Image 1 (cartoon, one colour):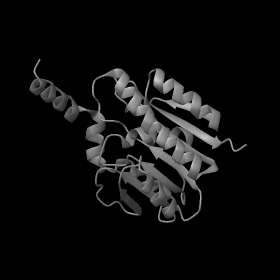
Image 2: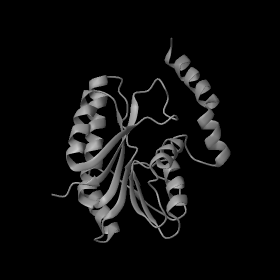
Image 3: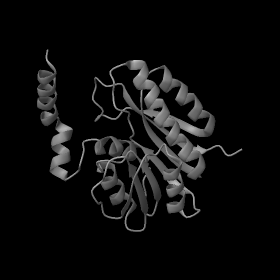
Image 4: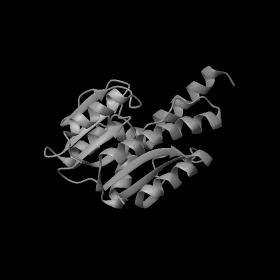
Length: 207
């Protein structure tokens, strides 16, 4: 099958996806919002007035949902390499989260205070080579974990996306050394043929 045929088939399935339709109906920028919504509903994570950093935020679907949950008293910094159209009550930083300059901007935004949550929906550009893709994903997760270890309140939480495999299992072990509780989440909005999962880590181990 040609690349053109593959793309056509993917698009046909995409437009018929019930979560794509639901996102369009509710004015959300991506179907991914329903993954976060389900995890939040299950664990009652997001509350009014929270301060949150989101990594890999484009196109802004999670931003829309988080902004609604934390309200005007909350603060959200959304970071991505790609531009993000404005979202109410959201500060946007366009940059590479792997660069120290962006980390310094994050800490400056936090103004010396710790944050309630670090969210990461980051994923690498897929090469199709499983070992390479898993290694790249693990590197981005490392960035999310490092951000949390530096900026998260002890009682806060970290939520990041990964892809099941040996690299991911190693990252899970690392996360469990730094947080009191962890759980692996597979939201219904994650496609059944995808090995995409989310890891929720709560309560930093500080000593």
